[in-house]
Image 1 (cartoon, helix red, strand yellow):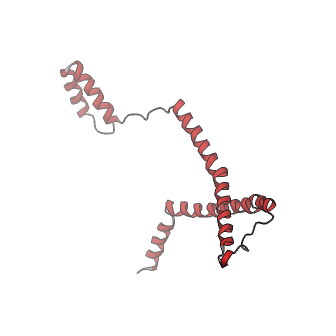
Image 2 (image 1 turned 30 degrees about the vertical axis):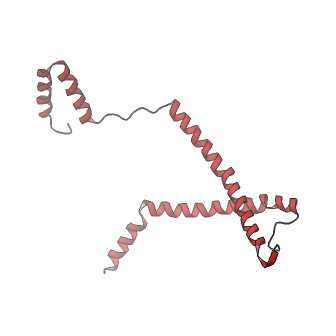
Length: 148
């Protein structure tokens, strides 16, 4: 096992596009998670605290069952899901709908036909009109080298 070969393989692996894209996605996801956590903790969580007088329900333990911890986790989940839904999902859906409508009203031009398809269409049209001209056109095209 040659160290240079192994290092070369490792470099090739690391430089693949999907590995780099994944790393960027993880970093952006972490940063976005911190923003969402801050919104929930600093902006949303104080609202139930003002309404109910507290935001920590862990003291609620009927019959020794820690239902308060469950309520804390459930409330945190609902608030986090609401923030992600209203600040990420809804705006993205609106942007996608706008892009879809724009694409429907202004369709892009179809891509140009490949040369072989255009040639076959030309031969087809010539055959419809005059079979002898089609044969002459095919023979003339056969003499042209590819890529010319």
